[in-house]
Length: 593
Image (cartoon, rainbow, N blue to C red; front, top):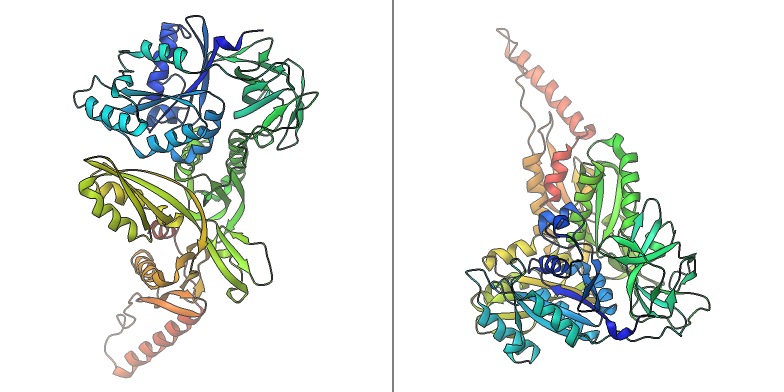
């Protein structure tokens, strides 16, 4: 048995693009875990999309050796959409390296991830990265970090992950300051799942931290939250490739090949136990609930079976993705999907395009409203306006509200407050990071930050603001379903949920857009926005003009009048009975408004 004193488990946390993955590359090089000829940038980022965007989407563990100590590193995602994965990764380690970019300073997600690390009681090692850049303000960032962590600024490490300056000092500090893991090999097996993925040949592979007991090949396993039973077909460690080992003991990080058929059977945060079983699950597990909903449809109607297969394969690797079939009269067959956030949605859309060659249409994202009906204690979760029950049966509707933190330069505080309050945000409080930057805290409906809030925030702060958000519960909202009628027929895909006091403005915006986008017909077309039976905005698309008298020459004027009367009757009949085919381009343009 390996002594626990020779093991250190730690992770790297930071805001997006502050150099987590580059620092992990230097660790792999310095410890000789990966040969120089096999090195490449962002080695732990496995997906092309991660390399191109410079973001980590899937966390990646790796085992290294340094001065006779086994180091288990987890490179975590930085984006707010994946904060639950980060929290479970932090629960699997004893220490965290907090990386801050010397050119950008402390950002919103730096603070959010630091809070998560403090909640888990981790030892935090502060590191200032990118000190070699000409615009690096190392002293100012060191002052901010020292104030934030209540430590002397000479205890903050200054490094350049790109060139390797100061990186060995981080590894020495990890060995010195991060405590060895606790746990006992004598107790019944308990292992925390901090990630899982699907392998075509082996089924679900879980990434685990063994807390108590030890794991052996072919051992019978039980997953506590999902009650799934299986056995360890194989187990091992990451280097960063998977390497089989004869055992995984308390304190170690590794993988188990379970043979399960769905990632949903081995969720992040679940506890694995063996025989005899432990009856005490590890704390912190919760089921991931989607926050953002959108419809995904194919460009060509006959590609629906291909889309269905692609979504099924994506679901195997992504337990947070949920979907159900949906049919739209305008867009055909597709799926109503649930996502953790907008980045998650964007990544799923791009993976469908790259990995499965699917050119898909994504409708405007919406949120899940809780609808309480009279005489029914349990709320109905409404993800689409068309699911809304009869208004006469509704007691109240509640919407998800987010706690929003915005880090911004002090000279743009007023603009940020105005932009947020224009979107129904409520200012809570403010604190200063340093004389030039502040953190503003707001309470804001999730629906208000979905579409263009981030773009507006970047615009009013010249790109300097950063934000972080987390669910802060639900609150009553006065929202109604707004329908769009074209030539008297309701157009279902254009129905939306709007605030009652903003409904006229929203309706006017849509009908004006449709007037510009719809092709003219031989008859006049009414375009209306309505709530229930009441029209709140209306436009008229004039009829195409055709000179039916052009073929006449000479003769009495009554011939001309007779033809015009005939045309008038025909147009009236067409107006009463005519249908308008709305082109797909018009749907997409309106959905973007």
